[in-house]
Length: 569
Image (cartoon, rainbow, N blue to C red; front, side, top):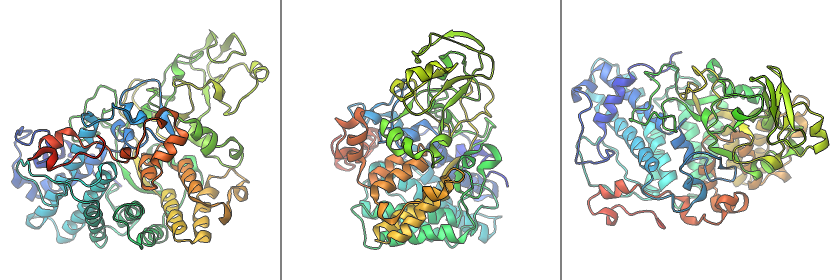
């Protein structure tokens, strides 16, 4: 199987700029990007390039620090690391405002993708040289993507400008749709896509949307809708039905080993992955369609999530930076609640996910004798290449016990914003060298464990505790250490919303979903106040929505009277 938007991406990127209308920074000023006529999209090559361009906008959100910032910063699971900016998203303070460039960049990129989808949908009937069956499938893919992009906009900002036709000329006429209209449109697009999407687990062209991906997204949409102002009595039933369809109808299965889900390379195309955002090692085709900065500070091309979860191992005794252990930007550090409660020490004897999600051992790659830093049980350490240099036991080891070890032991009481458990799901040892920022691994946007947990949630809110518990236990059994399967199972009496929230944390930690989960549960403010001291004093109900980019308000006729800012900003 080949990846669908590795080829012709430069051309697709040009088309994305040509097709964008109201997502330009200044809608009254146009810049010619390339001399490609609008008629080109009516040809087979142009049509395919436009379709691929619509997919490439996913790279502006998934696998980038921009997308990570609005999905994992400032939650119950993650707090600030030592370095980096945009900490207003952690603190919920005055730094989080309508002038933040990444909010504008995400907004513009999602609308760029939407407008490309609109163009393909409208122009498909007049495109020649492509069979009707292929056109129907591509239009269905565009409806999936359009719904996906609008759902991301809705979750972050609430009702936004709802455009279902191609914007072909600059316009300043925009308005905000209601939350109900947003959900109605998103669901209509996804349901309309189902008959014409490929009815299989993996597309013939790997990476294209399938019926399974659309049903997974529908389950997620209905769970969010169930707690929104547009909620209906059957939302949880529909969420459960779509999740069950994904589980039953396509042959997906959980991999036996949790860690193998994140194996880089061919392992990413596995029986658990429902939909992935594709990246590649080819720098010419690994870009998002927008001119994001390539400074290595976050908006570089490629899947660069490998940069942001790492602790500062590379200045410690016996260690230098290398490709295997990564380039540690120290942007995100797990909260005490994450480490001590969600991944509780007492549970780790049964549950493999802490060990397989976080690195606890670093082997010396810089032999010699060094002064110690964080381990006060010894003054110096000496290493040969390959010796253990740093070990994190995950519990408070006594000073006497640490003194017996020939390496530095980092205990929880010594964790800092620079030294902390390092999430390894996104590590990318296939990079060219130790400073190379772009990553090539695919981003796993939808996977089956998430589907099972969404099913459990939908059943729980229907009062079907036995069925909900079994859905959770499917995920927990896979996470068990050998011989611990029975110990990992829970009883129906143990299942409540707090357990579901924590279980999603254990399974999906760092996977660009937590902020949106907390929001849809109505638990963002409560959980941040309880478990994230950095933000507890600042977060308010207003923070369930992001500030509308000021550029959007400024480029609207009537300004804020026509396109209102979200309350509190």
